Length: 85
Image (cartoon, rainbow, N blue to C red; front, side):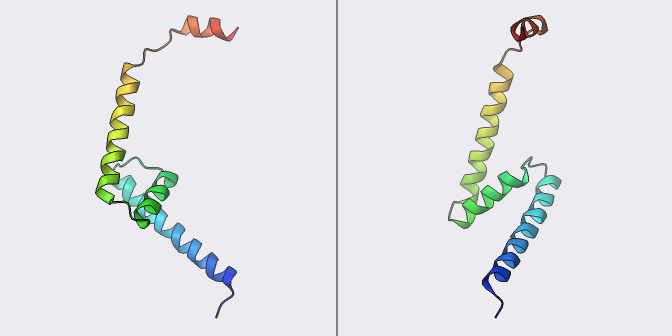
């Protein structure tokens, strides 16, 4: 039986490999999820969160974030430069 630290290292390596593969799939599907966000989503699903509900929440948050960006008015360059002084 391998020591617990070796077993833990193997589990971490397997988890990292799974995240890498899922990130590649995510990239191919243009999901725009970075590895950290993807890891959080995986963890949530492993802990019982409904994957479809999670996907809906991610889409809704993105939509609201995009709306927020579209509504934000850019600060004119001269005003921004004056504030830095």
